[in-house]
Image (cartoon, rainbow, N blue to C red; front, side, top):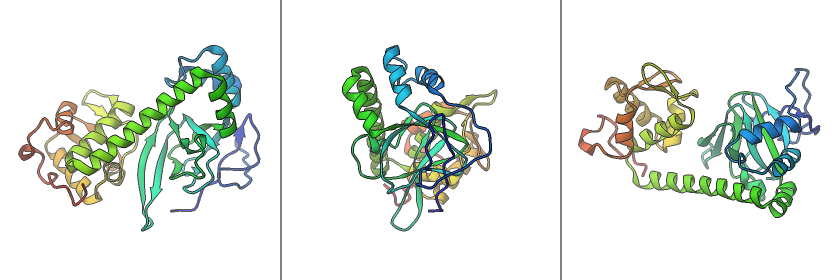
Length: 280
């Protein structure tokens, strides 16, 4: 894993330390994420949109806004877990370092999504790292504040439990996919999930709204770079997708849905992608 980045200054909530515990300085003007702006964001986020106004204001007041530049780590695998995190703007990826030193993408995080929830439930350390892929703002809710809000604000507690339950179901589904599903089905499912979260409709199809390299896709699908590249190349030749260096355009989304749901018989799947690649 590369060296940790240093977090930018906390906005409107001064704190002398970064995610890695080192003091930071910045001469670049930053947008102010005061309590009013935090409340406005939370009100628009699906996770908290149904909260009563008073509860929403108290959650916004308890959050701390931190800014991170592209490439900086929000937290590192093994860091003490002391907060619940919500992405307010930008884009993050959650990565885990394997025993042989490789980084595997666990999840891509979009604005409005919780991540790094270990700090909210008494876990001693983060099981993975989070790194900013764009300049990003993270709202952090310290564990002590989270406990206080859960015990005093039932609507907030229900919203957090429902969100974490959804994340758990996603994790279970991914484990099941890695254990039982064919490689091309896993890759198609990753593309459809990303299209659902970030896709932009164009005249030619649906464009994945984030840079997506073949290595990223391989890690998200739990396969090798060579298999991901071979599969994308086959689909490109069949005009199912148009795959550039870090850009993917879904030319025939319905065909990919059919692959993701195995509505297409295995013997008609794109050539070169039907093996399990030794990874189940």
